[in-house]
Length: 169
Image 1 (cartoon, rainbow, N blue to C red):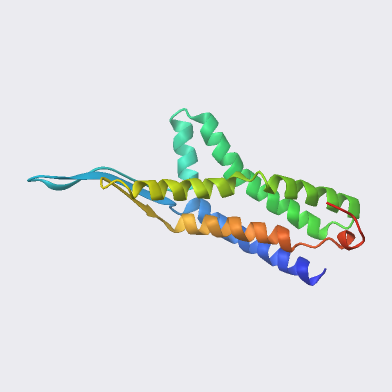
Image 2: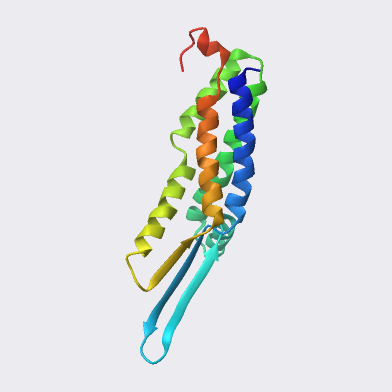
């Protein structure tokens, strides 16, 4: 195994290590309240959730399509992508490796995990403009962001020896 592929393997493992707390740790805390005369600060709504809890809540609230999309793009696709990349690293048939690599490279362009992180961050920033809404990014956000960045790096670092022989992506 080449040095680049050893680095890629290491990055895949680290990305999976980041993915788990990214899915199970709180990602965003949202608090809605107001400063009322004579009463002081009142909190009307406060919620802290992680991605897995959000999926469960959406299923319970009959939002199956949204829940299924988040489940698919935040859990299933990242795990599938990691498994395929590990197969690419250890699969010895060059044509199969290239096909699998091309598949992961192609779906990487459509990865909604990255878009999800940007959406959460934009929601966080949007709440900063309203005095009655307070949002706090939690550890899960940072772990999930780390997963996204490290996962993308693992694909970029990976080297298929057949590329050097002139095979194009």
